[in-house]
Length: 422
Image 1 (cartoon, rainbow, N blue to C red):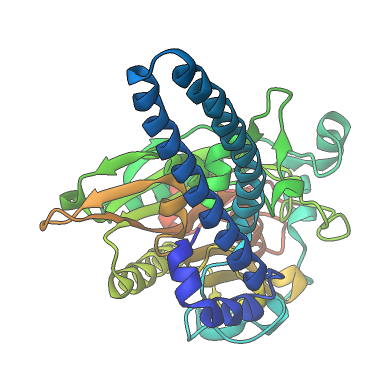
Image 2: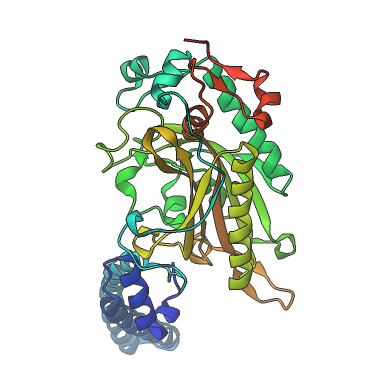
């Protein structure tokens, strides 16, 4: 959420940011409603002041004069009550519009409507070549006894799956390597809730726009699609110790996504599923644009180094305006090579938000000079399972249907080859 005074003073900049992000928001209407909100607030304050003055006068009055003043007070109270009802309605409309105002994208964010216009900024590694017809991860993992998609669908429905045998060993190995890798870079591990209250989703910017992609319980809570949501809520309504910045968390949680609007995409296999597990990098930092830019590059490098440990070829793309979320200032996607599709597929997303999330969540810190500021926030995927498994088995497949284990994962898997020869 942006500050309303900032919006009023920079309306043209906000409009341009909304245009670049392809967000439909009427800033002029918001400012008009804010004018009405402030007018009503002033009128209410005047009525309350009048009420206080009359109360003091009534205390000193006697007889008919006191009765006359009491009757006048009833009219003042009625007028105040009417103003309060008007103010409540205006505030509801004002708050709804405020939640829809997008953060301003960085000037370096390219133009574009969708991920088709994202721009590649670097690649790493050599894509594997095979002397045999390469198989996709579905065939490889099914024949190797690493996954069962048929029974997954029977038990869990569309996009259901079971990981089993070597599939579980590989997923656990990736998780253990991620834990070691990111802890060495100063991240504190946390296991965070997936069942999260609505306020935290509003605070992180996933609501109201993303509601259709969330699972909701009968008690009004939601299942999160990323550990970022709960982690950002950890310090909600608190003043944190700025001396500890940057505060780095490596958050682990089950994740749930309805994949609304994606029913025709990746309908088979492990690329797009409703339930998965993920480690997430989440950072709170001082309110500095230069600092956020530096941390953004650092988080991205952490993820790249992780893929390099497993020797997975990848590329980094900068997301265009139309492929940014409401609160993101800038975002990189890291995409690993997928031989069966002859293309790169996303494994990590790296974003920074300035104080968009922390203002909504009321997370502040005190500067050495004693000034209270909203912190800046950033996040980036650390490791998402089972999606990463698809790239690993496809890139490391062998002609006999077995899968070599990347050297970095061998100590955690306990063997060098997965599956059984065809």
